[in-house]
Amino acid sequence: MKILVVGTVCNVSRQLERDLKRVSRGLKSYAEIHYYLVESDSEDTTISLLQEKVSIDPKFRFISLGSLRNKIPNRIERIRYCRNVYIQEIRNTFEEQHWDYVVVADLDGMNRALTKKCIKSTFASDVQWDAAFANQSFGYYDLYALRAETWLEEDCFVTLERMKIQKLKVESNRKGFGKFIADFKHFDALRVAAIYGKMLVIDRNEEWIPVKSAFGGLGIYKTQLFLQHNYDFLDLEIGIYSEHIDFHQKCTSNGFKLYINPALINSRVNEYNLNRIKVVRFIRELLKRYPIIRWN
Image (cartoon, rainbow, N blue to C red; front, side, top):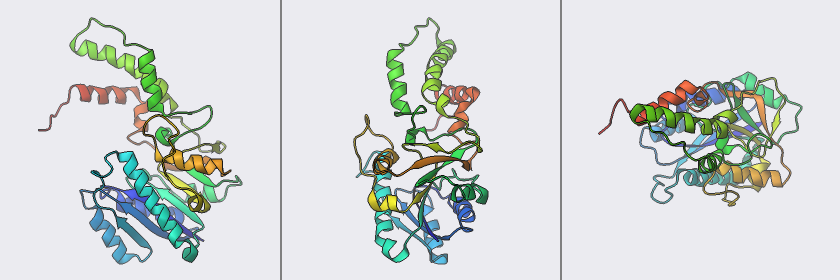
């Protein structure tokens, strides 16, 4: 069996080597592993590290697209563009390589908990799946890419903005720190309702969860999904939204089955699901309002 691991990378020099090792360790028992990464806009040593990997591993390849910021100012749209580049590579090499699966992985530290056991839970499952997405044990964090009935059916940030409009700010006569406390209580309740309350803790032994879209830093796909679909914008929702939404909408429209595998744990606590803890949210908001260090 052959698996192609793909992903987009930018300024990942600190985490790249460790995440590559974790992904490789998890997958190598099941298949011959190849890599194709799409880099852009890095300002650290990411490119030199990628070049080093190419020099020692014939199954590792990458392309650098240089600086895209001026051409594509929005970060999500840059990622969309880069993902379509690896789709083209999948198609160009499929006749020769016949990839059995494509693994899309973030290589920025989000897969630090990935193990062989987690990967095995996917390939050994009786579920008839076409794509399986990762879970995080402290709470599913990737709401931006998630769409699932009865869980999250629209962009959580759009929901939050609508709630802010509908629930007008409570007037307060307080000033200074007292006003900060009043504002925090008011807006934190809205954020919990729209975002942090949706970061569900999913037990690894639960049944697989059917979704319209998900990601969570790791997706294992049957290759056919990339041979038929791309990340091109569909204008499905308000504003700019996750590129995964468009890709997965195309897949599900053609009958492909997408799931979150609760046992496919790639992360425990991370910078996103840590916000489930109220005191963490409070400290982060406090530092925004009263920064201890001001950079010149």
